[in-house]
Length: 323
Ligand code: PBG
Image 1 (cartoon, protein in one colour):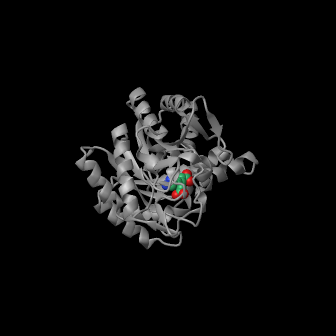
Image 2 (image 1 turned 135 degrees about the vertical axis):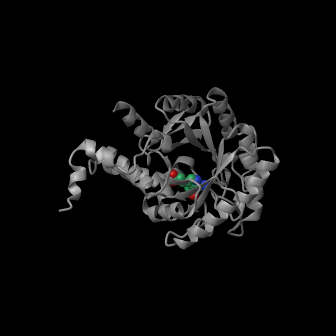
Image 3 (image 1 turned 90 degrees about the vertical axis):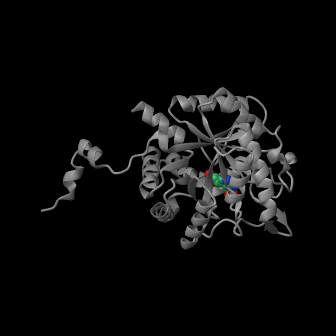
């Protein structure tokens, strides 16, 4: 009789037959930067995650690197008074973000930085693009994204992560970077980024929620799968080095779809709301947070994501080091 349970009979055998295993090398750790010094503000909706001023962010990165993490994705929390309609601060070389990127690369050249290309942290409208009469302008937004990407590359970004979902931005950014001599800067495209309720805690962290309307005219409809192939084909042809699906857990079918159809590495963003759900339930004693974290990350990898952006990265690395 064929007895599948034989391959599960003890942990050594289970280890032997295990098909997918997450390691720290698969993970990118998103971090939140804020102004000032000696500032560490907990984000209430993301227990264990904080906004750091540059000095403390450097310490945090150092600590994470000792745990084996190498790749970080910082996002800036910008004060409301500095935001405007055109996100002009985003490419001002004296902004807190570009200064911090420069500083991190100087202190830790071996830390790999993925920077965020989108207007929302700097936009007084809280949108990823320029808003005019309630509409999000596409090509005008790309002009801003181009300046932002160049400034980030110049500050030392290793990978740029356009998280905006404007049409044609991967090709435009690739060309702008290449022409400026930044042909070695990679692009991780937010390819299938859905208009998701699971971004709520992230918008708390950055105070970046849209002031009016929603993001449904640029982010994808959660009901759609085939459309992800169109986005992926465009991003691939336009030169993306990685294709990302976001969020991760409710979109494992989309991860698998891109994995089956494209040769470039697939990334998944295990977003703030996915993190918050596990943390909230664990704090209430409703589930085992550590096991839920490991299971979530493993299943995202099983679906086909080689790269996982996750707020669990540090906790995962700590756990890995203690075992
Ligand atoms: C916006 C952006 C968002 C996230 C990353 N970049 C939110 C949004 O589109 O409103 C979400 C990340 C998360 O929830 O962890 N450019």
